[in-house]
Length: 357
Image (tube, rainbow, N blue to C red; front, side, top):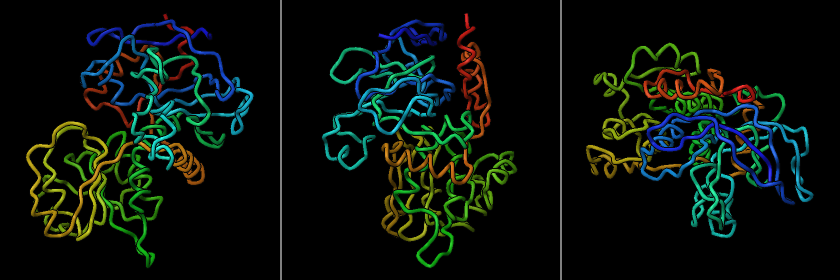
C-alpha cells in the first residue's frame, strides 16, 4: 500500500481538513500518478455537503486531475514514467455491458466506479479523489496529456471539458453538409458554458451565448461567441425563434425550458448537461411536436472520446480559464463557488499540499 495525503470532508457540515489515507500499490495494469493540479467542480461542493443525499464519508473530492506518471504496471502500454496524464470522473466500470463495449463507460449499465464518493469495484473500500498528492488508476481510465497543453488549464478538461465536448460530437455539431456553420447556442456562462463556447467555435459553428446577465457579454465575446442573446429580452428571443440547430444547456438548476425550446429549428436539439433536479415549470409538449424538436441529456464521455477531446485541445490550443489556489484555500473557494465568483474554474496547485497544515 502507498501512503497518501489530501483534504477530506468528514460530514456535510464540516470544512475540508488534512487527511492521511492509503492507496493500493500499482498492479499490472495500473498507473501511479503524482497529482500536480486538481480542478474544483461544482459537484465537488454538492457532494461534500451532501446536497444530493448520497455522500460517503470520509470524502476526498476531485475528479479533474492532471499529474505526472511515477510508476506503471508491467502490462501498461500507453503510458510510461515521466508522461503527463489525466484522470476524470471515472476510475472503473464493469467493462462487459453494451455501453462499456461501445466505449461509453460513463453509461455503464452496472454503474461506473466514480473517482470519489464511490466504492471500488467489488469492494467496500472508498474511492478517494484528486485533492491529494497521488492516485493509482487502471490505465484504461487514464488519458495521456500532451506536454504542449498548459497543465493547469488542462485539469478542468477532464470534467467540464468532456461534459461539453461529448454532446457536441455526438450530435455532430459544427458545420452543415454544405460547409456552412450551424447556429449553436450555449445557455449559461460558467465552468461548462465557457468550454462549450470554445469547442463549438473550434468545430466551425456560429456561436451565440445565451444568458440572463448583460455583464457577461464582453467575456462571452472574448471566449469566442459571435453574438450574445439575453434570454430576458423577449423581443430578441422572438427574433431568434426557430433559428438554432443546437442548444447546449449548461444551467445547473431547475428552470423553464419553454423559452429555449422555441429557439430551435425544425429537427433542432437541446441537450441538458447541467441540471440534475426537476425541471419546473412543465415543458409544453406542443412546442416539441410542432417542429419535431428534441430535448436530450448527456453525461461526461467515454475514455476514447476523452482522449479525442484532449488531442483536439492540444491541436487547437484550448484549455479552461482558471484561477489558481493553494490547498488550504479550498474552503474559501467553496464559499466563492456558491456565489459563482470564479472565472471559470478553480484549480488547486497540489504542490501546496506539501506545506499544508
